[in-house]
Length: 398
Image 1 (cartoon, rainbow, N blue to C red):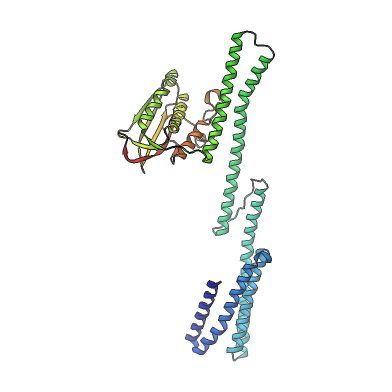
Image 2: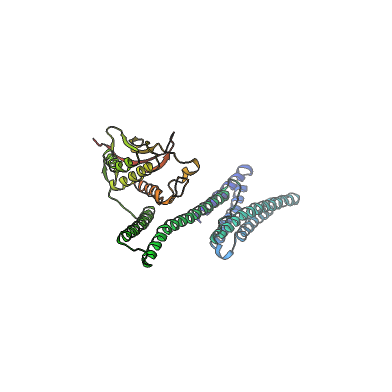
């Protein structure tokens, strides 16, 4: 309120000063005495309308009342000036005519602009209402570059994001159902066989028990991975961070994976930068990421291929680690989805060989929880996955 009154006083003073400069001090004082009460009354009326918005109703009524206040102010000002300052009735008539004409056109232009703005607001409201009812195929389709157009663009982007996330959720549920159904079907068949006394001897019984144990472990691992991924993405997990020697951690992980690589005739080795800085991280979780990446690389590398793990300093006080293989690589249309849960970069849908497809999703959640990032890098051949971790500034590992 005080700012509005201050503005009205300044505007009246400016009008009075302008009149005094052109027609003398008497005209200036008269103009000030006319404009100041009108300006203050307009400010009070505008604030009263704003305060009573909930009782007045829609924006059309609010704009209509403001237009009425402006028209009344114009009519009163012209009437008073004509009565006090005009001598010629001829001049007074044309002054009133011009003021009425100008005011009418201004009201029409304001109504036109307000109607367009309210139409845009209605489009946003209708779209949000449809989204609230579950629709994801609606858009505001507002054009332009003003605030309402940007609001409409934000709403359209939000609806597109919701539609994408719901498709991803449905795909995730379908993948979970598939991965749960496979071991559960096997368990049901094995239990039915035992229940029907089809397991005759001890050797067959041991084989069936082994299969049951395998499927139970697969179900348990899948459920644990899903639970951990959910906790990671919601930020419910907190780890103790410490100074980690990444060169030692990389070499230790490669040594642990070497029997698996030798069984597939895949060579695995490390290329580590000298005097590599230590990272601020949780060693068990970073080793889990390395296990996931190296295991994926070995799994998708043909015999006599190779997997190399590189670690080197990066910009902005970070350390970059790369796991690269000489496999067939990932098709371009699938590269953007490799970190999605249950996504598999291969063309086949082999569940037993490729696992549940949660390794890269969990790896991304772990790296992001450390304040780093992980991505699929360009490679001349094969696949290259890289991730960055913050380093302990100024403290080399050796």
